[in-house]
Length: 436
Image (tube, rainbow, N blue to C red; front, side):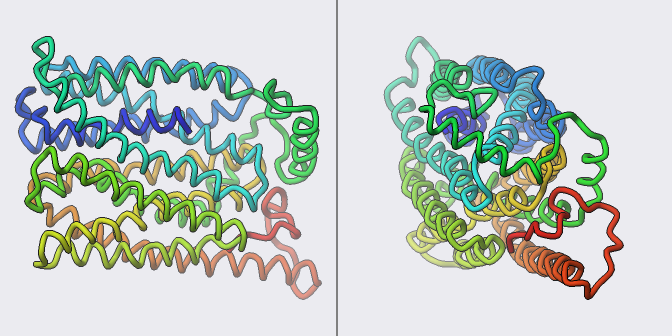
């Protein structure tokens, strides 16, 4: 959690730097600065699937791979504070995206190898809450740095923002090396009973998770799975909110009439509220083993929030609306990802599905960077509202598809229907019931 918090902080601090004078200092127009936000996702999206499949194997060891990437993106973040031109800013963002692409998919895949299907929403929520905490802590840290370090050693406050956050990320890199064992069942920090529990869980998963040896057949099975593309389409819609809101919330608040400094600390409770709501809904989702209905319900306050922001209402009402938006911003992507996690097996089929779903979903970051260009951000907020509406339709379609698949398995098992399916392993086993 700590590593992903700093990772997301490094990714989105450009939003705090934007209202602190970074565009003017590097000579970037609004369009150029929006492109700088978007280019991050060019390398991020392109490399997510390769990094995920690589992390699913044993060489290089996951902790070596991720710790190395963490060191590089930490240095890239720190050096971003020294850029003085638009091309240098683009280069820094491309390098940052290339390194950060491997972390979240690999951590998410790792969780599926440790926790049972009915425990995963809460664990994924811990990672996504880090995005909310990163927003809150980022606003607080930005407020403190801009007030206390602006002009120190002749450097603008936004430059210190990148330097300090890059150093913090570098200091937490050893957490990946020492805290992410290659084999959870052999983790040095677990007690003997806990290691025995990990081995027992591994044996339970073995029937569905298959071999650790890479298989192109499993990759092809994942690529032919309709639920992967339904999930990816939902993720794309939800990530338009996630990346637009988490990156540009300070700018959105400034557009309401607040100062840049006020926007930094006013964003803190919004992020925290969204994170707490996610923890609560993820807990209920695991207890009931229901996924789609909770994604659908979480989007309803988000729709209301964006409607209020777009309507000619008082600034206080618009600020209240950001809390409603935050419910959908974090619950949607996190619960939808869990919905896919628990419904795909074996190992390399799941790795492929997670990597591709996140790649398609995170390409929304390119869109988000282009729609929040000029205040009062009518285009960005309108498209976010439209994305939520489309997501609701896709959620319903995915729920109906999975329900039909469960019914088909039941009919085959009872002899009411002949089994003509080409793939019958992993999540296609007759007693593997998809979570709805």
